[in-house]
Length: 176
Image 1 (spheres, helix red, strand yellow):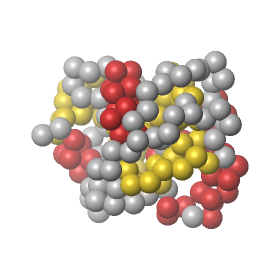
Image 2: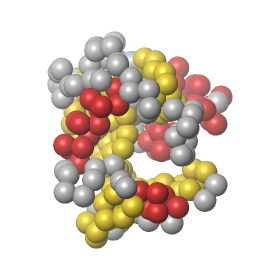
Image 3: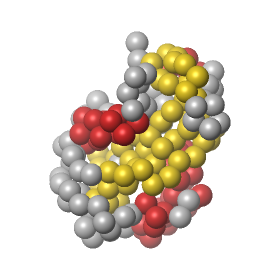
């Protein structure tokens, strides 16, 4: 059974909880979202596997998940990027925010989300249990499509792209 780290509104660790329970009872827990750009400035997005227990079949940021108890968020983010997308590159934390959103029937995301950014021109090697497709997309095209096709994107991805200055996610000093 997979556990997540329960946190308060300031990301102070309070304990641990089963991941499904946290999502069903809207318990705030620690998470991360990774944004990988290529050298052309395009963002790598993935289409989540349709059988994921929430947000299946939707387009989302490059990679996202939760650190487990005893694991740092930095270590979890680096490990998950490699496991889910087959990419290894330098990532840096650029921001964080907390949100609560219903993402399905009796399923909620109540997360303190750490946002990471990196640059890579590696071709993703998808873990097909997690993602079924990917594409590199320009920010203007992405924002336009998010406006036209809101239901095709995950809640947290739309929040990040709409509520935060997306250009600060790209740090030209990063190299892979």
